[in-house]
Structures are given as structure tokens and as C-alpha cells.
Image 1 (cartoon, rainbow, N blue to C red):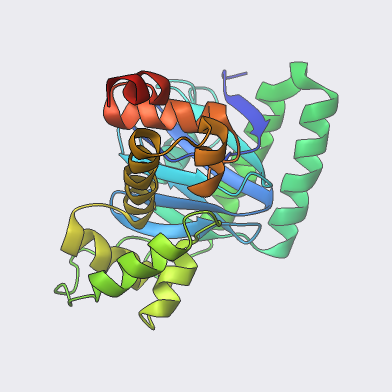
Image 2: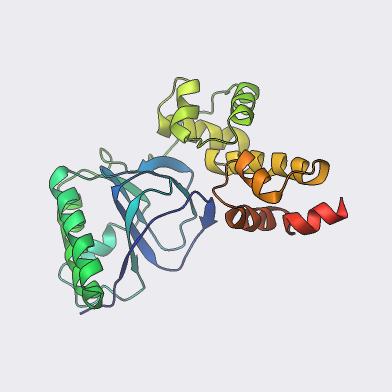
Amino acid sequence: MPHLDLRTTTLAREHVDHAHDYHQLILATCGVTELALEGEGERITASRGCLIPTSSRHEYLGDGRNRTLVLDIPHGSLAGLRDAERIERHFERPRFFSVPPQLHRLAGSLMHQLEQCPALHSEIAALLLRAIHLHLDSEPLAGDGGFPLARRPCERLDLARLEAWVDRHLADEIRVEQLAELCALSVGHFHSRFREMTGATPQAYVQQRRLRHARTLVCHSDLSLGHVASLVGFRDQGSFSRAYRHHFGTTPSIDRRSC
């Protein structure tokens, strides 16, 4: 049995931007995660999953309420698996794909089995991967979330209006869907235009606005760090401090003392 690392998790409301040296499959049984994959953004939900090839840069921001299956597929781990070569081809390019009701029900059942019998994670992972393969084999790539070969020219967005709206809602959950609605665009189209115009994904942009505002409050107010965290949309002081240090290279408490 190949070693496939399958786990269940809840993706938090923290912006993560990284790449890794293995393929990855992401499915959700409930909740929402905003995910950008090689510049293309969509929402991971019960009806939408994604395939992330090795070394593909991706960003995500969960809603803190999702239940998500994450399958890591290290190099060579498909050896010995039925249809291994055909499964490997699904990871030749980044891909979002639809999750029909029957696949969603299977994912929910397998998540339950994984939580009950964690020692069988490789066997459960192989079954899930086989089901995904059979589903994707029946769906045309171009019609099911395969990335276009060329993008449409960038059209200008009203960035000042977006910034003003974001700044008024820093304490709230901000979804890419909301920003897209402000521009009367689909989420995918908005994400592409925004990335081309600013060089950042909407998720990263919102995080930057939160942290810039937070730094002003840290340096020019007497508010507790926990209060600052809540005002800019972090669920707790710990996640705020981690994001602050990652962005500014120092902690909020040290920054406050040096201001």
C-alpha cells in the first residue's frame, strides 16, 4: 500500500502563502476556504475541490468553521496504486474541480472513517484518490476548472473604493466573494483582474490592510494587543501576533516599546 498522508483539519482564519514538494488534494465537507492557486482564486466548499501540483504556489484563508480533507502525495507514493500513471496526470497542472453530491457523501463518510480508524489512513486515502480519479476522468478539463492558457487583458478596478470598503470592515470576516460583488464580477474573474493590477491576491491584500492598521494602533494607542487584534479581524491575540511577526519581522509588543 503506498504511503499517502490523509488528514482532517479545520483551516483557520489565517492567511497562508506557501508551496511544497508534494502534490496535494483538498476537499471540504462543510465551510469555506478562500484559495488562490497560481494566481487563480476560488472558494473551496462542499461542492468545489482542488488539486495542487508539486511546487505550485498557493495561498489560502479558511473561515475557521470548515471541515477539510487534505491529502499529501509525496513523490513516488503512487507506485503500486491502480491507474497510478493516469492519476499522476491529473496533477500536471493546477486545477479546481466540481464535487458532485455522491462524491461529497463519500468524502463525508471517509472523513468519519478516518477519524474513527486513523491507522487506516493510507487505505482510506487510496480509496478517496481512486474516487477522485474516476470523477475527473469523466469531466473535461477545460470545462471543469482547468486554467486557461491565456488570460484576458487586465481591466482597471476601482481600488480606492475597495480599500475604503475593506478599511470599514477590518473587524469583520471579509470574503473575496464580497469584494467581487462590489465590482460586479465573478469571484474567479475578479481574482484574476485584482492579481494582474496589484501583484497580490485579494486575501494577501486584505491581510496587509489589517496589519498596517494594526501597526498604527499598536504604536499610537493604549489599546491592549488583544483589543487591537479584534479590531482588525483576528480571532485571538496569538494568531494576530504570528501574522504581525511574519509581516513586520517583529512582535507587536516589541514594536510598541520601540515606537
